[in-house]
Amino acid sequence: MTSAPSAAAQPTTAQPTTASVARRISVVGGDGIGPEVIAAARQVLDATGVALDYIDVPVSATRYLQTGELLPDADLETLRGTDAILFGAVGHPEVPPGIMERDLLLRLRFEFDLGLNVRPVKLLPGQSSLVSTATPETVDWIFVRENTEGPYVGTGGRFRRGSEHEVAVQDSINTRHGIRRAAEYAFGLAESRRGKLTWSHKTNVMLHAGGLWADVIAEVATLHPGVELEYQHADAMTIHLIRRPQDFDVIVTDNLFGDLLTDLGGEIGGGVGLMPSANFTPGSSLPGLFEPIHGSAPDIAGQGIANPTGAVLSAALMLRALGFQAEAASVEQAVLAAAVAGGLSGSTDRVTAAIIAALV
Ligand code: IPM
Ligand code: MN
Picture: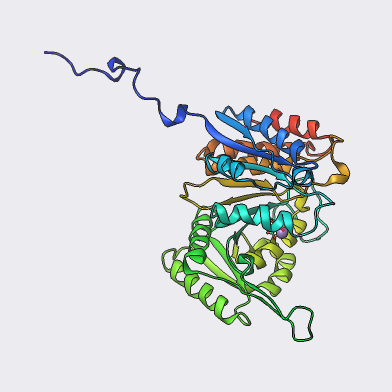
């Protein structure tokens, strides 16, 4: 009687598994300190052992000034063909305001339907906040900002220009679909953390937009009975975040309120300089975009002193979105350990080395 062939006896030359195929990452260093912090993030990514192929995409305000090209179709298609975009910072004092914002950053959010802007805010040990209620224990939040709707859509216009009767219209566009995907992600995230979700809007004034948000939040809440839900108007939220930071964990809100609340949150959490962000839609086949919240900081560019923590933490969010949960957690843990050991200050190289040394 022959025994069943063991697994080891099976041919091993068959199909490659997905795990053995390197993920393709578009790298947009951008301007100023962007390329410096992204180089640091890449060193940390390489130290995790995850197989990644990098494709440099030379999008920047500097190139725009030189050639007039901001996001040519060829670059857009390169980005589209990769699994994720690691983004530094773009901006140059000579580019008039609004161009990089609308024609690059927002365009990428719309082109790749990046429905969520997830912004963890954690006061790291050893970092100080200007807000006295903020400690590493009280400030540990994740903002889930809707990322493709609200006034950011850009519908409307200006009419009767220059006259006393000039009219400016900027509509807030809100869809059930857009709100639902933010809400579903936020409830799921809350379930995986403390079971606490706060949502914020101005339902007392923005009756139509706020009304749809309230309806969708209530619908999604019925699927997550274990999550404790709190609502705060966005103006009051600015007070509550400072007065009782410990009461918040996951916070979901619309695009514009999210823009404001994450700047405030980041500052409470020790400054937006160290904060990461993830722009993505769960389950999408389009690439997500991962970037530190800070700008290109031309005043300190080229000196090797930019703090790469926001870029490194953004790279961790990228790893998580790509399915490398354990590696993402190790990078976050390493940043925390480096913070505890006082390693998050000094030159870019010193901080990077401290984080890599703390990787387990
Ligand atoms: C941000 C920025 C952008 C925004 C600008 C630069 C378009 O402030 O990512 O928070 O308003 O969303
Ligand atoms: Mn902002």
